[in-house]
Structures are given as structure tokens and as C-alpha cells.
Length: 228
Image 1 (cartoon, rainbow, N blue to C red):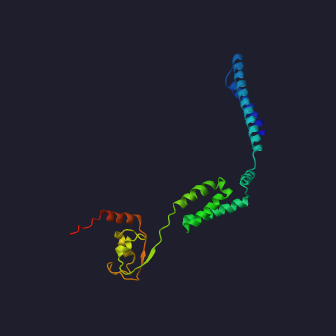
Image 2: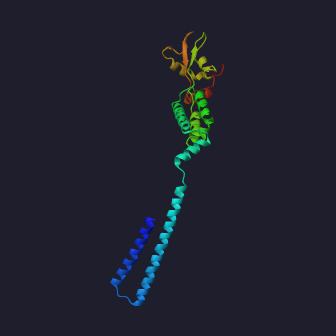
Image 3: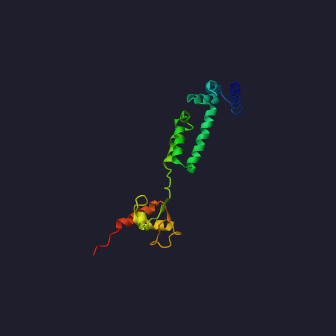
């Protein structure tokens, strides 16, 4: 209301100043005076109309403001939709952050992390906008991309073994051409790759994809010498 009165006063003062200035700068005929009065009166009416429009806009904004709900109440109502309190949501948030850290650090076993995530998904709080994408999409994607490195196998040599045969075993590489991997992994135990002894224990490391491709190519290209 104070702003509206101030605007009216400004318009009136502007109108009077414009009229006074115009009268002082030029000598006017009666017709010119009447024409100028008409122009300024029209200008005043247009400005007064704009003021009325602004007043209505201000009243509408005040009405909207009065109808707005307290944001804190909105949050409580949102939590109530999933049957949770602020304390419940805080605890859930902590659980999500803790599990997210374990997944990023790949804290094994992976199956346990999946079970933990499944439990979070089953909680209704996970449906809240704050958690839904992270719990149901991003954390699951991180778990899906988590690939555990195959364990290193320990093998005890028996009579008649050789590195080619050990590498060729299905439970190892299924490819005798990969024997150098076993040799390199056990250099401190194998002085000569053609000489290994019963009861020696060798580590059988997993092959990298590059090694798999390399030795598979060797096997595919191998052609035994013709029998004479």
C-alpha cells in the first residue's frame, strides 16, 4: 500500500513538473495549452492504470505467499508418504553412503555387497527422490561393473608332470602354449622349465585377456610336423 501511494505521488509530481516546464519554455496559445493538457492528462491516466495493475499483481503475490506451505512441513509430509521420520531418513542416508563407499573400494565379498544393496532397495525410503536413482541405478551399475580377479591357484607337482601339461589342464588354462606364464610366476622355484619335480608347489595365476588372446592365437596357428 505504501508503495502504491509513493508511485501515485511520483506520477503527480512528474505531471506538474512537465506542465510547469513546458509553460515556462514556450508561449502557448489557448489551443496549444488545451492540447498539451489533454496529452499530459492521457499520460497520467496511463500511468495510473499501470499503478493499478501493479497493485493487483502485488495483492496476487501476497495471496500466493500466504498460501505457501512451510518447506519443513512439506519435507515431513514427503517422508510420511513412505512411513519414515527425519531420523529414519538420516539413518538410511548414512547406510547408503557407507555401502556406496564399500562398493567403490570393492570391499569383498561382492555377494555381500549385493545383498546389502538389495536390502536398501526393499526399504520404502529408497523411493524418495534423494535416493532413488543412486540406490536403484547408479550403485547397481557399479556392482555390475565390479569384476573380481580370479584367484591364484596352488598346484602340487606329481610324477610325470611338465609345465605344458600343467598349463593344458582344464582347471588351469586349457592351453599348453600358456606354460610360460606358470614359469614366470614361479621363477624362484623353477631353474629350468624342462625340469620340475614332484611335490613342488606352483602358483597358477589367472591369464589376462591379452594373454588369453596371445596363447589362443599360438594354438590356432600351430601345425604339427607331419609324421614321417
